[in-house]
Image (cartoon, rainbow, N blue to C red; front, side):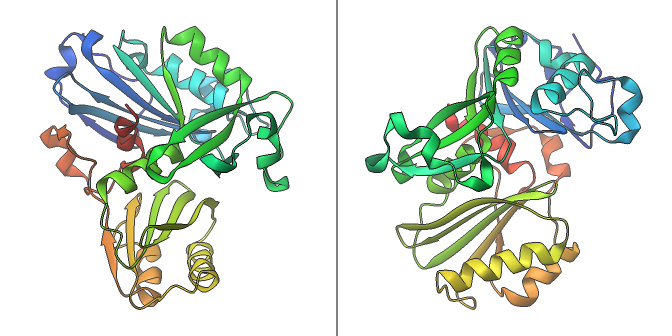
Amino acid sequence: MQITPAIQPLYSVDDPVLLQADASSWTLLLQVGQDYLSYAIKNHDNTFINLKAYQLSADVASLQPAAETPTGLPATVASSLEFFLEHDGVLRLPFHEVYVGYDYPPHTLVPVDAYVSEAENAYFTPLHLLKEEDTIQRDAVEECGAYNLFAVQTQFLNLLRKEFRKFHLHHISTAFLKSIFKLYPDKRGEQLFICFHQHHAYLLARRHDQLLYFHRISFTSETDVLYHVLAVVKHFQMNLSAMRCVLGGEITRQSKLYELLYAYVPIIQWLSRPRPFGYVDAFTHYPGHFFFLNLSLALCE
């Protein structure tokens, strides 16, 4: 049955014929943050057949989300998810598997040999103080011998248990880590990977086999990103003129952000859609590096 969302997405990719098929063999890959959500659907042939991306704004305040800030927008990741569940019926289809990418700041990477389960709270810096209602989750990232610890709002966990009969929860940064190590095994030289989503980005720097830096940054201007990149390069004594900077997510060659980065970083390349999956032709309407975080959740299977 074809289901039309009650709100308009920022980005939309779909195959109307395939979306009329039986969803019980499909996989839902869901990326959700405080005021946004995107999802991709993969069929039993490992082909992506659908993607939607939403961003809440004052335009939808009149739709009355479950929990609101004074601006009328959802106050938590849980209330954002609840809002989208109410307004896009596709999310309630009986999927075979559901993978959820939690996109919210409190997360930290800990080497496996340094991890002590009884001291999980101690790994979080004062910058991201844990709240009483948070639950700590752990992703294993075998590709770099580490655990990715992240704090999840208990309300969000309860909503997932209510809405999905079974699901796999990861931090979206885990999908990014896994995708870089799996899809870009050539570790020669110095590399800086940056994936943009809305007004935040994930940065990963490595030198040969060594992971130098991995962090989520928030920014309000293009110069915020440039200053952070230059700070990382300086701190780890990377060679700015020789390193490869690989970009993905919501950035284009025509953007001011790209132009500013290119003025300082001469070697810029682009991420590609995760392999070995197939994609319906409608995906070609967007650059191949778009939706990288959401699609990379498939590598967490």
